[in-house]
Length: 406
Image 1 (cartoon, rainbow, N blue to C red):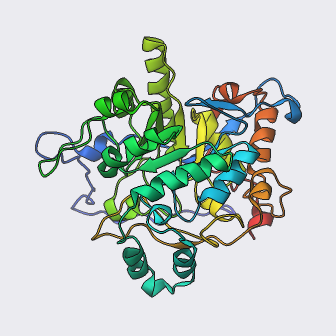
Image 2: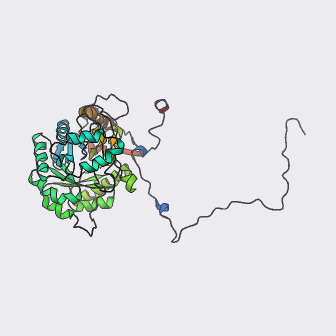
Image 3: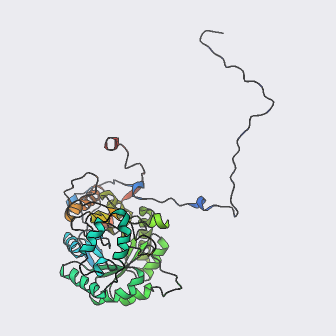
């Protein structure tokens, strides 16, 4: 054998062929499985915005929006959560160009002076907070306080946007219309045009919107078809998001939700189809899941007209939650009403929205980041931002960032 060459030992002959693993698809009775048709859906971390062919100066970007008869300088709506909105915060946000929604079933309408209750909730140990929340919200809603808070908002030069669940809307809606509210939001975990119930008379949304005399918005949904049906019943705006909020437990407790980019995009498509058919434009509000400036930009690019923020604004020193936040959408007597979370206090509401930012994670100067993103993408206004290209990019947050994440 020449130097440097090798040869393999011959394999022994066998009388039995080596076993082969065979795979075959076993279908369930009926021929298909639900998982065979799972739809791919996208959250904020799955997508990125792609630059186009032009850019503009950030100072020339227009972030204003017309929302249900209100002209806002920025597309920001503070969530109807007790730790986020009271009259002073609503007044400050109005000064900055946004608007706040007051929770009509919260502490502001159960207690003349709710500060002491808010202080106890913020300071309570984790093991006692659910008991304390249940006791605090056991007090009845007082109709005279509903009227009083509306007067206080008006006196504070704030638009009057108020929110209630469907079960209380029939009772509280006429009071709000009588006392001059600008917008009434009917908000629940999942909203639909048809609610089936045998133990009580459910809210007839079409009749309610017709008789209220003021605009009625509805939330929350994630569905194209549900959104079309709600629009057909006369709603003035639709809120999108089931469970993405930091203080919301819907996805964990009930197993319900759709990632927010897909949900916004689907409902925005329904808005556009409805506008084409009827000539009536129904704004879409992205509700929850946005913590940083980039996520605000992605929500607008997905089709949102307005952005509802909870926990990011609960970090303001003006927020009544004193550095905490908790969910409010589902006042169930047997399930938690949302988990209390610690968000800390970052600074003034103005700094959180307009800077100057003192952190690099995008959680401050939110409107400034949105404005800069629009400028870099060549979007002069929010409608133009809704038309920018979005790409599937699940690694965008970590690509090349090893020095930041080491």
